[in-house]
Image 1: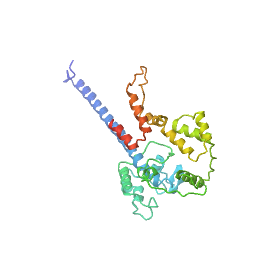
Image 2 (image 1 turned 90 degrees about the vertical axis):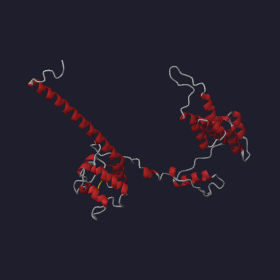
Image 3 (image 1 turned 30 degrees about the horizontal axis):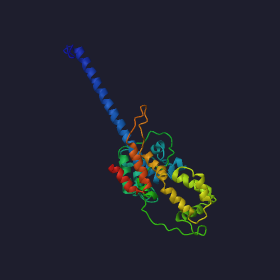
Image 4 (image 1 turned 180 degrees about the vertical axis):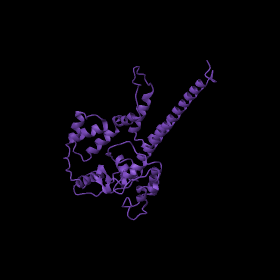
Length: 307
């Protein structure tokens, strides 16, 4: 039967219209609810990415339960604290930056209310705060103060030692190490600064065992131990190092770390254990590259090129 058959019947027509209107309302409410959820998630992500790091870096030292600080009655490391405000009243007025104490404080226009007190925030941070307030000051659904660790701060990360340009450091030769290597002097200096006692020097057998395990992943043979222990020449240690580095075992020991990162395997390891018949060629090339002391940039370039 067609859907609109007997549509001239007043009762049926009214029922059909009511049914269609109900469907329309449900669809509208569902779409609006979904849009609201997506908007809330976007706003919370904005807060966590841009606003919380600003609060953490510039505000938590004075306004955070995690730091046992509530200056002015204001707590910024919890949703309840942000919504309640401090002794001056409401901290943020959603959608109205001009009426918000937060915006007034960071603008530095009022001599009695300037935050953070040390120095004004950079323009980029001010812009993010204004954006956050104008979008309604969304907050995560937390009910208790958060115990935060430092969030990722790309700008602060640039000061990490790993991103600093290389420089030449000339260590001073100390009385404790009149003929030591530069690394020994640096380590000894740091040790003394931290008031740490130096470990005693290892005996020759222990030294060779450590060195061989480090470079080959194996223990020295009895004859190698005997030869080194009884070798009193000044360059005995250097010759042992050269011997170990010249051995194919060195590439096998250290090349495996790169192979692990590259997820090397001779087979897929599944139930059928399908064999990669030519995989050994890449493995041998990596080991040879280590043994031939190929520079790391060249080592990387060759793999990217698939050579």
